[in-house]
Length: 66
Image (cartoon, rainbow, N blue to C red):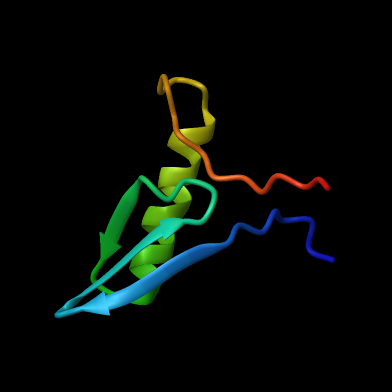
């Protein structure tokens, strides 16, 4: 195992851009000129959103129960 954390993301191509968001943070979208560029932007976005420096960050989670 590589030891790196894995993060799910959703993406699509729109015209000449790749657009996407982190599944945990669906309200925060970013874009790139290629899929690899988008992934770089998503990694940067994740760092910003999990740093604690941005107030009131909305998250997505799954509630388990009866």
